[in-house]
Length: 367
Ligand code: GDP
Ligand code: MN
Image (cartoon, rainbow, N blue to C red):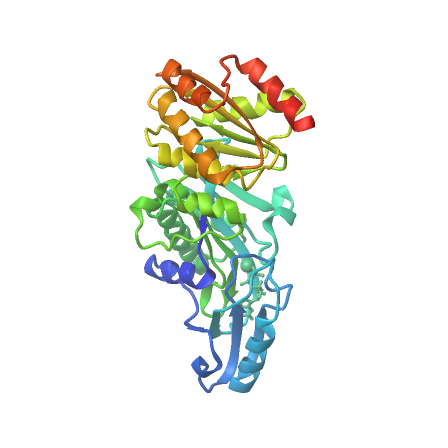
């Protein structure tokens, strides 16, 4: 998931006709102009709750803005520091609303979520105060939904049009950018109508290749997960001490389940995918050695990924990396005999039976 920063989201909002305050992105004192009106300066960090932690300040002139910026630079936002800031006109807010479009897996459709109680974490708003309506992707946002939403939020006739346009904008962004969440919290009711005072846009990873304009940047990933991501490897760190490399997400999950069932604790999920490149196997083992120094379990069901390819990669990796962990290899399938022979020639006795392999892995981890 790629999370956009508030200002990046607001640029997109503007393109899609969602009103946002006029803003300037600043990162240094010298970027802050002279001014004499109520402005707001906001930390650009990929985490919520900035308001509560002092990352959003009202300022009346340049001097106050500079002071606020320097103070905000020292705030730790869940491990992030603000390097960029939004400087924008501070509207007088009559009411803070919430609105978003997100994927609801339970109904297998995007949904509109909205509440008249915005400005706070939506999870803390009681269910009955949240408007929730699926959007049929073949139909889009209907006129009926716009009216119903406006009524639910208690908006007057003149704002009904605006909220309708905003919802259409949010859904278009969700659709065109392959987002999994497009959120405005708060959507401010001001003298100038409804204005998006904040933005949150999350883009689906698997669609990034379609959106070269989106900066591929990950927040909140573990260092090793990030390294894997950059190498195009599918890797998730877990809590345990048994490293796992398997080919295919299904075999990975099954391996994790079997190890857990046998009383072991998997250290990671690692899908080698279909590969015929020993180099990829070496990369995988190198990465796995960062999550375990106890046992590494390589579980391969050969097809596209041939057993001999894996065996060559394993042998080379062990020779080069000289890892400290104990190794259990279970390989079956395409070129199984050749693969087992390559391993055996290098003193690695591979296994065929999965249950026995799992048993050995868990036993070795307990030693
Ligand atoms: P978050 O706490 O990280 O979600 O940051 P927000 O952008 O939502 O800002 C937090 C709070 O600051 C909002 O709920 C508003 O009450 C206030 N705020 C943000 N922008 C403005 C603005 O332009 N004018 C005024 N008066 N308040 C603002
Ligand atoms: Mn917010």
